[in-house]
Image (cartoon, rainbow, N blue to C red; front, side, top):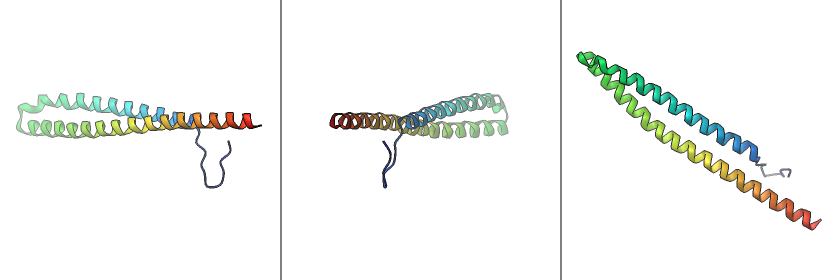
Length: 106
C-alpha cells in the first residue's frame, strides 16, 4: 500500500533486518567485553608490585563499569529489537487484513 500525505510506510523486511542487526551488534559487544575481561585478568600477575597492584585494581574497576554498561546496552538493544519485530508482525497482519477486506469489497 502506498503511503499517503502525513503517513509513513512501514516495511516488515526493513524492521526485521534492523532488529537482526541490533541483535548482532549486541553479540559483538559481548565478545569485546569478554576479550577485555581476559585482558584485565592477565594484569593480576602485576599485583606483586605496588604500582602493578594499583594498575590491576583500576583495570578491574574499569572492566566492571564496562560490563555494567554492556548489560544495560544489551538489555536496551534486545528490547528495541523485540519491539521492532513485534511492530513488523503487527503491521504485516494489519496490511494483510486491509488487503483481504479490500479484495472482498471489490
